[in-house]
Image 1: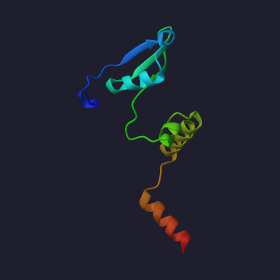
Image 2: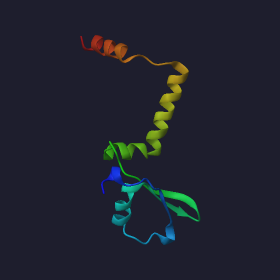
Image 3: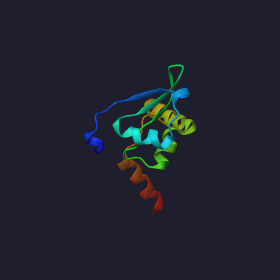
Image 4: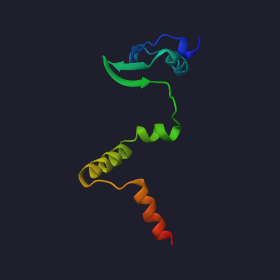
Length: 96
């Protein structure tokens, strides 16, 4: 069966019972994420990547990058932002 033909089912497994190979768990994610728990608390998840590359994955899980984005968003909320049209105008003026 292809991914779109497989029913969506999230799997949850305790860390001490996760004895299959990583490759086997990766094969399972076609039908939904595999969540690994420790004493019932989620600690990791295997999910299929769609429209993401290694850089996107790396940045989206990097605490320093996430903090940078949050600071930038807070600044925009507080001070406002400029449009892309205005940004292009400013750069064009500097290049002359």
